[in-house]
Image (cartoon, rainbow, N blue to C red; front, side, top):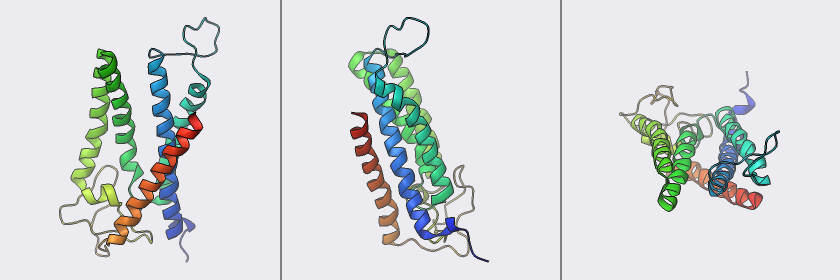
Length: 207
């Protein structure tokens, strides 16, 4: 009996790269949209039967919904295709989203003395960092390397590793393998290159 096509090392590698690229693209677009709306006074609108005080620019109307759906699809790709290989987007998506948007609100406080920006920004940063800290307590290695090799073998994570919300599978089975330097380079390299490519693509598309 043959395994699923999703179990191919190539599919896992492509899945990790595609998920990080799409998430970086989507988050950068959402971040840019946030700054545009904040520069307009914190709100804008388009369409409808009422008079609109502040009209949303076309790029806000286009990228606000696309960025949200794109981020969700990116996480789905990570779950369905990467399957625990590579720097886990499922672990990082929430912290990046909330800490990233939190910094935008904090910037509004710093440059505009907007107390609402301080409150919302601090709350978002706390929401983002809390699950990341919990995942790091489960296994720092897993947060950056992932739990599985491209061939599906599970990595050995150390005696103190334990289950976490995003990684419920028991760590260190008898068949676990030690990650090599190449394992780290592959996982982190894919994430870094894909994130940078998504960021540049978002900047070009948004403008």
